Length: 219
Image: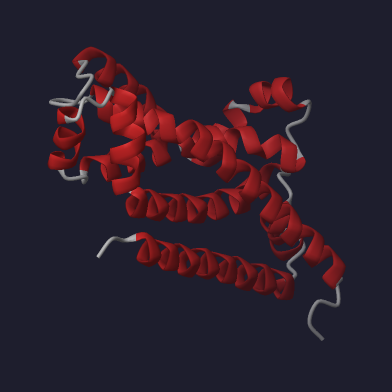
């Protein structure tokens, strides 16, 4: 019989914890990653606020963070996580490293989406006397919206992977359940169920993201 060793209530609790980690970390990732991506774009070569040195420094910092494997980043950020949340365990304890680990990734996606906007849109807004922030909020972001939505979708899927990985240090959620029961206690049925749920979550996020991209893509 499937799941003799663990009840569905524990599966449900772990699933809700994963959704909480995903929702909280995705919100803050977009909150911090979007302005970082905009700043990267604006300070890049031939852009409105071209600053080669500032762009190089910011780009290097983001690349360094992105280069650190997430499981190592979790451990390195434990003191900061405890300082910010009071714990390094559970949903609260994993959100800071999730945000720090994925915000640079999302910022790069934002930069790429903005670079794909037709330069004529920027020039037209400038010709009408638009300020830099008017260009950003009334021209760049609306035009790049499908790409930004696709970036959020990809980032959410990466976060699902990271939330599962955080189970290795007591982060909670389906990843923690899979490690504690599926791996450490050799409960194959638990491992299979958690993997299926994670796959379903990823497929749902991808399908929903694709629909939004299609809806907001201008014909």
